[in-house]
Amino acid sequence: MVKRAKYIFVLGGVMSGIGKGIAAASIGKILQARKFRVNLIKIDSYLNVDAGTMNPTEHGEVFVLRSGLECDQDMGNYERFLGIDALSEDYITSGMVYRRVIERERSLGYRGHCVEAIPHIVEEILQRIRNSTRLHQADVSVVEIGGTVGDYQNIMFIEAARLLKLRHPEDVLFVMVTYLPLPQKIGEMKTKPTQNAIRLLNSYGIQPDIILARSEQPLDRKRKEKIATSCNIREDSVLPAPDVDSIYDVPINFEKSGLAKLICRHLNFPEKKPNLHDWQKWVELTHYSGKPVKIAVIGKYFNTGDFILNDVYVSVFEAIKFSAYHLKRKPIIDWISSQDFESGRLNVKILSDYGGIIIPGGFGSTGVEGKLSAIRYARENKIPYLGLCYGMQLAIVEYARNVLGFSADTIEINPKTQYPVIDIMPDQKKNIRKKDYGGTMRLGVYPALIKKGTIAFKAYGQNLIEERHRHRFEVNPAYIEKLEKSGLIFSATSPDNRLMEMMELPKEKHPFFVGTQFHPEFQARPLNPHPLFTSFIKAIIKR
Image (cartoon, rainbow, N blue to C red; front, side, top):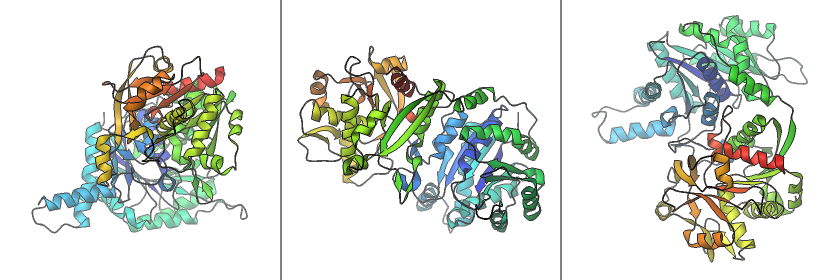
């Protein structure tokens, strides 16, 4: 076993969105396959303390850890690839770092010294990285520095990495993920943007040890030689990372390219034979062309300018895939904006073309009436339905309106509604009055008890479960009895029976109409699909 922890810093060049997170997760996977203890750390340079208050169309999905920390979506990829639950200490933002330094200064933690970015901010960053490594008792920490080389915002993090390398040259490795464009009109892969990015990194005092060349096509020998010569790196340390059909192919491709052996050579790791057998079997399932299951995911965060951002619901999409592939079905997922139903651009009857409908989490009034019309269509036409968080709350609103005949609403949308079937918890009312929105929702893992004889119990196969939450609003206790008498089942509750965690319709009324107050998608894994999504897919197949 390695005696001293090692550190691999993953940086990006040329442009954002080239897959640093997948590269970091895949590096972690191939080292984990060699029985090294690995932890993954994500660094985001924004001044937000966490990702909870950011607009999904700007930053993508907010992923919630077991602890309740709201994070960047890369943390979800880390958990899915390694099959572990990440710790709060594995996530670092500029906001966290600066807030801690300022708090320490205010309490005379620096004993009257002048507090500056260097060394105090840099040392706080290093302390956080080491703390994460220590808590995991890791042999190696893979640290992804968000953003792109050249961004002003991530300079302090790059400086911290440089300083760690200076102090422990044999324990630190730099991996640069870069992009080689292939302009169609030119017809030749271009290396100049990569050369410029690495020169810029050199100006910060860092020389990459390994270059991962992202591109549409595999890197050829000529380009490899050019990058090696121009960037002062060994040719065998420039590795191809071409586009793939599935992100889960990446660890396999990295293994084939010799990346793990290269890392072990640089860090003086002992040679170990990898075991990627289970992962390889899973990857083969993702390429299996079975019978299709067609699913509509109805949300409101898809549009970003003139483009579509599917990262907003990435955990939902992946959870669908995991369950479908394990059932040897090919998932066909369509993203539908609920606003299109409201505007008349789409008729809700198009949902008859789908085997199942999912309404994921969200906030606010935009597109709500479109979602309600979709829920009603799924209920009345017996199309399998899975409502996640807001999707459960709106299912209850729809049921109260169209079955009980109430002009019901959630007070999130209509605070003056006569029938507030979805209300806010008293402690949350205090937060709203104080405008304290960040990190104050019901966040992280909470237990729930499932009633026997329900669809939920059949899915989970057990009475007690733990799931991750992210919400302020709850089913109003004043309406629970009325809803249950009309036929609605609250199939899971908090252990004290105060909070409704799951709802469903009886099997004789609907084959699968289920809502969860929590987010099951956050705990779905490639090698361990979530049972609720699996039951949902089974219901589609049976129908």
